[in-house]
Length: 389
Image (cartoon, rainbow, N blue to C red; front, side, top):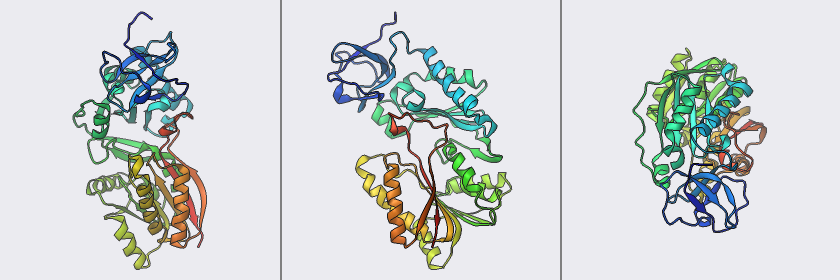
């Protein structure tokens, strides 16, 4: 290696294969590199460990990227990583045969900590979760252009991420939405609109699986967002579909998505708690009920309150499922584990007085890979059940 990088030393032994090294393990260098700089990492014993992003302002001080001393982390490194990620989706998973909307890069799961890229046709939506990914964004854009010639970009970072990682980014200017197709069904992906990335591609296989169970059925899609599950259900032959969401903006997008597919779906703007109480009191029952709420918390101290809210909404949702009907319930709160979510469902069934038979437990599609040593990248829990009585 001829390129000189800043050096960061650890003050305690570190033998983990997890790519994150926290602030308490790192000696603050006398001259601190700018947030997101690529640095050489030296162990407490003086032995070289690897190269990664350094951020002295973040709780995650180091995000390790490379452990081969002969491999530079440069523009070519990003190009190779992104090419490998695209090859997984195209050559192994063969997603182009199913959809033109899929996750291109899934952070640690694809070896670039703090970077998420979603593809919606010719539109690439880039989300930064680390100062390192943001700082080297031009290399990232160049690598993406090589894989998707003529692509458009929309890039952003949530305010809480910018605060935690100490960088400022107002995001790129709004871009026209993309019309994408998955399993023959069309959706409008609008990252500048109500939902930050434009569309939830992670639920693709879950939508397809559930839509095969709905022909001739009455379906209630709670927290429907832009209408994914509801539109699938109607296209696949559901007799009646009602979608409910509290956000007027996403309801408008959902109506447009239904229209794109010639699907008649009734969308209702409402808080699901009073809505479900009213439905229950009126004796309304559905053959299929879907519950897919937004992320409940990013704070470890708020996991118990989040589980309580999951419990309350699942208990109410179960009350409007017909005996023998299907119930699909989801959590995208990464801090809630699968075991915790299943235990919540057990308790919700108990309090609702229903017997729940679990048919299938899944998560995000295979284009959202996660490393065994980095379970933080696994966030979506999907549980498909029959309600027996």
